[in-house]
Length: 544
Image 1 (spheres, rainbow, N blue to C red):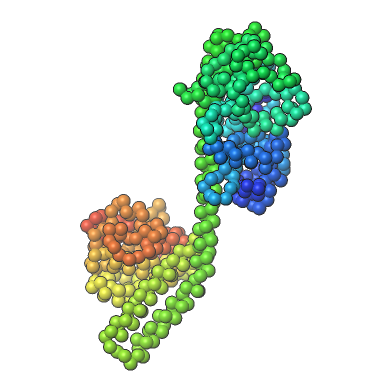
Image 2 (tube, rainbow, N blue to C red):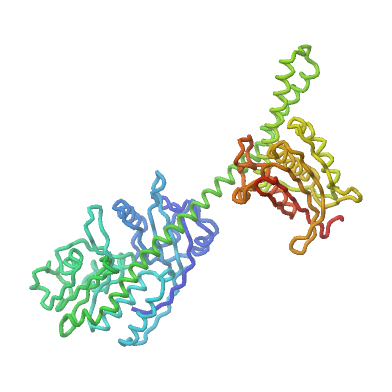
């Protein structure tokens, strides 16, 4: 078997049971030579070495999954561009419909016809001991190890396989490397189609079957007369001597190797000679199993991430497009309730209170809807700023006029302590600046423990850049360091210790809007000492 260098760049696909590609990442598209693979037949872009039909291979993997077996690795080739690939396939059982998770890695082969010696082989195997086989397909790793086994013992042919178990916990052998000993056209075709994907042997009434069942070595220098022999198919090449060796990882039986036709026959000395190599194979098999599990997890996560991102995009675009439908009826309700407040003849306390409640809750609901829609527009990439020279003093004055009634309901004052000797100009969207101030001050009112709120503007330096900063301070109970980490995430309320209604969108929206402005938001707080929220607008190259 020729040495080859294996370099992988994994691409991930999700494929339906009938072979239609449901999703493919950019790497998979590149490896298979297509801009977009979704909705197309996998078999139009990839074929198994040996030309076993992909549909038949998928059926085999589905049957294995029913037996709670892991997915398998196979040699395959991309049709355009022509290149060798390692294909790993797993059945995804997380959903009701049947589909497959596929991972493809490119394999670059370099033929090496240098004659092998015992020292060369041991050096190759030794170098593989410290290697995790993430970038090596099983066909290469175990084929190289089989070459070493045969050369060390001067044997003619053999195999190396992994021990798996069926649904009845009966062991069977799945080969990862096997010599081609086909003796007619049928067996040659069978070998060509199945060797690249791993031959399975379940007949225990054979010499190697004894090792599969017992986990014990077997030496048969007269194989046809051995009590464990199950005979040979007609036309099978001569089997003069046979050695079967179990492969262990610690105390776990993980595989076996079988070799045949050493000229002088086999003995216990051969087992001792091969022990370092057999121990290496135990490590390689376990490493292969762990790598398969890692690749499966990675592929599942990549597909799940794509599906979640797609769902989020659909949600964001839906909510962004619902802006008019949500706001229009609510604005109508607020408009008519305002007219009723000024025109109704029924001025009883009960009626006035009811209309006040309608108006107050309607305005609250409108603010929540506005925040939600703004967040959705940002997520969908639909929100754009209308930047201009903006005076922060003016924005603060307008915000405080707007929110004074809310402050009065809580029995507190909002005090602006900004030095007004000069304008505080930044390049920003004045409507969004007003929105940011309103969100920060309304939070300070709600969560400030009925204490006065202080607002001011100052200048600051951050990462060697100049900023104008709006500060909003309350003197409430404060926020713990642990909870501060969650503050600017969506749907996280400003204070988890208080049962105050809110969606948690306000601070998340502030964070998103500041990022759009090229600025930042941060909080300083200690339990019992209140909170200071600060937003910084860049002033470098701005109207200052």
